[in-house]
Length: 101
Image (cartoon, rainbow, N blue to C red; front, side):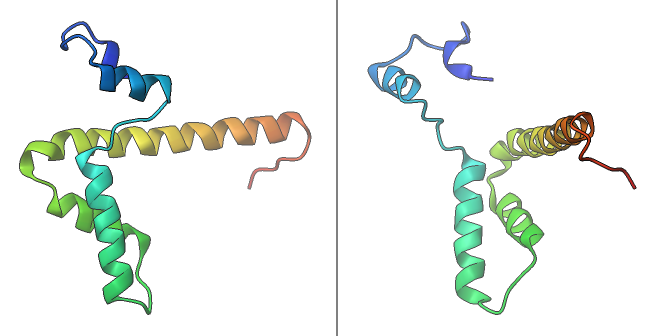
């Protein structure tokens, strides 16, 4: 969902319009912390790490004010991935190529 057109927000600025016209989503605090955490782990642990460590480090480093929205984003992302998987499986089964179990 896009918050740009929500009536509770101020009118769109020229920058907002450019972002919308170019289909660019604003970077969130979670996006920034996730990128930073990934870079840090790649630099400090070249031998490898679990992908979940990126998310945990990013979430832990978020300011408290951003954690509730970030948690909602994480939950939505998890749901969206599950929904996508279900739709792909249903399509494969309908085409005769999917199997369960």
